[in-house]
Image (cartoon, rainbow, N blue to C red; front, side, top):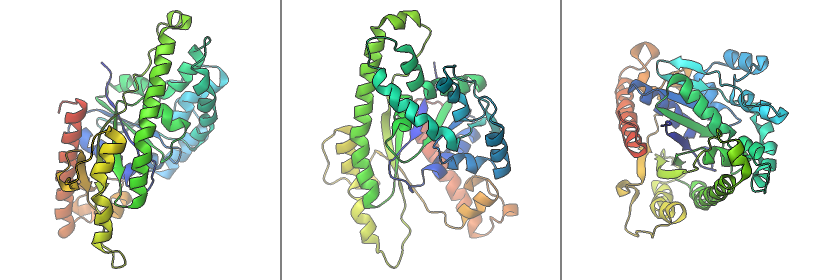
Length: 338
């Protein structure tokens, strides 16, 4: 049985997605679950959160086989096969496959092979390329006997993200309390359904093809991409934008999520605080965040020696409680036993 692949996705950026994955990865590891993090955002912000710039520069400049997600799939562009991923051990039970700005070069290859994968013959190469990210994920997980795979992707609806999503078992949607996040949510629901339907057609086409018998060892992802809920950033009060301006958008999220993502009827009286699909409201930790970034730690791992004293020390404990509760809730939804 393969470990669940959990992807955090919204085509609207600036919703705290990377920070959320970073903290959940540390929390799952602290709960003794072995985690593999795959950075599939060409901006590589998650990689920068785990590794310092000198280490990243060395990895990118040496271009060793399998050293980044791009170096794993790059051989496919040269009619070779996927390279074995070389994981970075961050801590006990925590491993990273670094991102790479060059991953954008793979976008054209994915776009070209997507229509080819519905042809009548020669399907092996297109299917191998389109499913490459899933193949790498499974190789990485098997290498360290991972319990869960966490994936970060960029805020767009391009070919890279389509290939990541067909490799995904579960999807969490991070949101902000604004019009743009709400519109992103409206776009995201139909897109997920379209990608899932299109991939199912390709799987059916593959299963009935002669090449499926010739390459029977090729395993392909099921493309479940099941949404398990959303997370909303807590707004920070500004004098030039009253709380009611945020509440206007927050109160629309539950029904937009039901209609656009789940094809469910809206519940007009539903508030976000009571919505079972709202996994958590992510607090603003203000000055704790730059402190954690400086020491390259999760907020809840800060100590008095790092400067977390007085009210900061109390906030560190609050963060630990919040992220632990969120990790436990997500684990229950994706079948990971803690």
